[in-house]
Figure (spheres, rainbow, N blue to C red):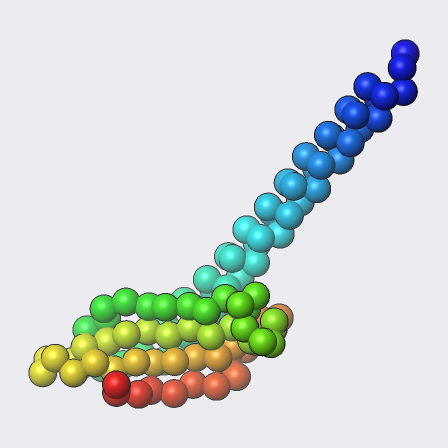
Length: 103
């Protein structure tokens, strides 16, 4: 048996296993960040407004990789917008900062 096909097969197997592990880590991280968002949505409810959407800035795109920035957009009966902004630690899941603004 030649060494080259064996090494080629082992390399492909290693790449496949590495790709699968990266996929699972990303999937688990995404689920963890989603739990942070859902927990914030129920912990900081706004009364008398209609939910119109949400937004997220993933930790990988910010200067601080542990900082996760997200928020919810609401509209009141007069058409005024209200934004809830959250900053969370993506390692611990705790809300670091919270503010409500009207753009």
